[in-house]
Amino acid sequence: MAQSNPLVSAVRNFKALFKADAFEGILLIAVAIVALVVANSGIAPAYFEMFNGYLWPKETFYLNTLHLWINDGLMVVFFFVVGLEVKRELICGNLSDPKQRTLPIMAAVAGMAAPIGVFLLVTGGAAEYSAGMAIPAATDIAFAMGVIGLLGTRVPKSLRLFLLTVAIVDDIGAVAIIAIFYSDPNLMWLLISLAVFIVMLAMNRYKVRHLSLFVIGTVALWYCVLNSGVHATIAGVLAAFTIPMQTKDGYSMLDNVEHSLVPWSAYLVVPIFGFANAGVSLSGLGLENLLDPLPLAIAAGLVIGKQVGIFSTVWATVKLGIVKMPPGCSWMEVWGVSILTGIGFTMSLFIGELAFEGTSEVARLLRDEAKIGILTGSLISAIMGYTILRLTTTHPEEAADDPSSPVV
Image (cartoon, rainbow, N blue to C red; front, side, top):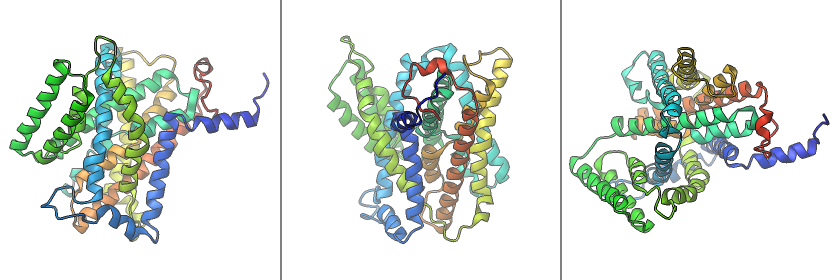
């Protein structure tokens, strides 16, 4: 068989980087690196002032810094897209079929529980760190699928689908964790939020098809949830569940809205969030700080807890005959994909901000240490997962379906 032209292969690889799956992950890596460089450069004071400087007194309006507007406002778009994806999967996707959803749901639950167990083991259950136990439980869909995109046909479609489904179930769990453990509800605003949500459900039920009305409802729901004490981003998920799936003429408002928002979420919202939250000043933090209980627990939870929880669940359920192995893949490939679920980044950073919020020096130090653990654990998981899957055999039978796949 003739060898492929190196120049042609290089061009194909370069083009493949800009496919959605691959480029989203690469963009997040680049944003994290830039944020770290800026936060440790001469313009660091301007960087921190830009995001944390007060715009007005908190009594005027709760969102009084750019950082809060990004985390509690802009990120609603990200969670709205997550909600749309979850609804679509529940109604007509992989989560709608009991046979297909059993394995990823069981794996995702174990993949959230095991990192929490590892976190508690490493920290010894110390109270000062307990708020961060959920940080390593999350998986970054864009980052993980970006690594998969770089690997092209080395990862069979069945495992790509498995990873995507696990990550979606993982997101559902992360949203539940935020709503339950990182909220301080106000009953009056909670009831108002519920009323707005019911109105939006009624709009769906009675076939209201004016998108502008759902936009107005989403903004109103966000404002009510913001004041309810439940984290405002939950409004994005709830609003997404009210978007109509399909009408008689075959038009799907949900699909249309999702396709319109996904690029904005992936290439604007998440990178802005990453740039605002990944920057951590390393001054005063040495290599020994990586071995402090908090960053070590988070990194260990992501690197060890995620892969152990997911891989052991897949292995046990397959061996016990509860489910079947994803078709066309090896145990080595299952292990590699399990490792990739340890890429926490976006959701982990988000939970970390909620876990150790506050303006005190202790809170700031804990947030910085959490970021170090998240970035370290995510990077190790990405490199390990990529290496394991890179060493597996290719799946040439799938290459014909995806001629743009990179040769890596």
